[in-house]
Amino acid sequence: MEIQFIRHGHGDHLLDYPNRLDTMHPGLTDYGKMQISNLRSQLSFNSDDLVLVSPTKRTIESALLLTGSTSFTICPLVGPRMFPQNPELPFLKCDYIYTRDEISSLYKNITILDLHLECWGEGINRIKQSTFEDYAWKLLNWIQGRHKKVFIISHDGTITNYRVLLGEKELSRNDFLGEAGVYKMNL
Image 1 (spheres, rainbow, N blue to C red):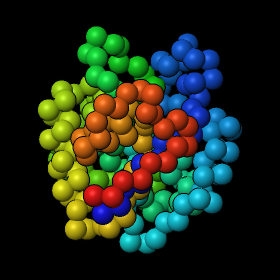
Image 2 (cartoon, one colour):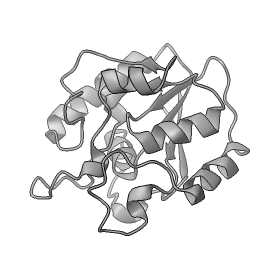
Image 3 (cartoon, rainbow, N blue to C red):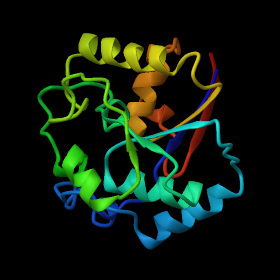
């Protein structure tokens, strides 16, 4: 199985960093939209690929621009996740995820993947590492055998957490992809 992790483009909450990190549901800036539009020519999506998207406005906007359609699936298991974990840091509003009802109301015809895990409230951002690993393996096992190619449109911390889970060693914040970055893994 091939997984391509894609980091969303430049978000509104970064325009006046760090003063706007408490912005609820920030979208993409014009620059972020341009970054994702430029990335689109480098990627190809097939009808049998799975495109999983974090339930945040900036990742959904990135998915809409990348795929040119609503042929993707929103899943809280690829939502924002802090890296490295530090329970003493505050929960920032920019990392709140949309609820299922908000997604259904705002984005018609988008599929929601719900594996019936306790992650729709605050998402996966601050859950214990062991819980994250359990949930992430459930998602990866669900994908296995269903899809040969998976795109995950997410956030730097989440992508790095998945890379560690999948065996990469000694990663740090220096390994973040950055805006509209792509990282490919074969499992």
